[in-house]
Image (cartoon, rainbow, N blue to C red; front, side, top):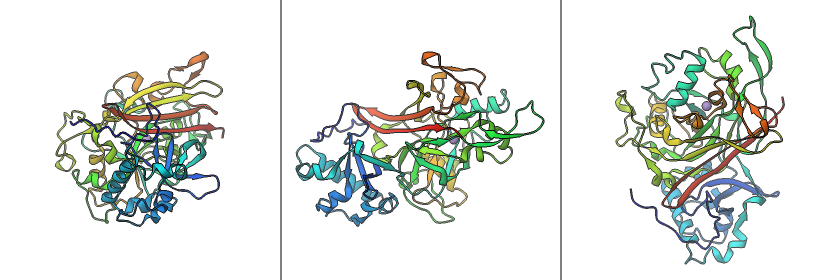
Length: 417
Ligand code: MN
């Protein structure tokens, strides 16, 4: 693997910032009462792309820069991969320490992040949630089903998934109201109704479709990267008691569909290329359509923090995207193998990402063994599941050769029912 090129810049970027010159993630932001528009994060600032375009600095780009005035990224994404790349190259050129074109108008086109409101970056038509962490699937299988045969027989042969609900995906910072639903404990003779008593987070990542397909088309594993725009952090909130009672035989429904949270900045696949790493070793032979010419994953450090009501924020999980058994190419190839079409803006989530040891579990379900033991926090605070007023924050970043490409965070607080 070649070293990542260092790009000296005139912009002041705090040390350990997720948003380096090598990153340049896309988001939708607004300031005050201005309408939401497209921005790129750099350090602790946002490049207002529509403003940069108005100064004529994008005249050599081969697409209509009016897409930067839109309130979602869908139209920009639709301009295609070559244009994402040209824009990225142009921004890196403008940020170079020897370039004065953008520097001379910096005050007009750079917005401090603290002044901006971030919005949902894409219009999401469809949302699918995979189940691609072997460790998570095994842990959940032991808790919900059979400790001896935790992994279902299909699991090592396909990236198992369910269709989620896109309407309830919200951007980081949006409060989550505790859902109510139907539950039944194994001791009870009849189900009851009320607010969930086992509200949980799921540490996930998701990728955003960047190129639509037609009904009937299949996307092979080696074409898959051409159909993906970028990635985000994703918290797939889950009500375990509702889920446990409802999920047989058709899978998750109301225990999941009340809300999912996503980070506001989409890190492009191009920015993530230098962080590719070896795939998890597979002992079971897989069908040809799921094989990659060169199997890989991406080395992205992931963390989950809890801030209990009136308490201090604490790290409760450290895991990595590279632990996933199935990579995003295999997920997309499987998703389209029956001819199901995908559209720009669709969100395909990884499933909870757990690692091999107890500090790397991506949900409270696993950390507390289904509520059988307590998670001990500072000041004698204990949690089995989330309480009203608790916040969960997920962070993620890739780092190599002193270059950091990060995702910022996805955070949300639980409100009472
Ligand atoms: Mn999930």
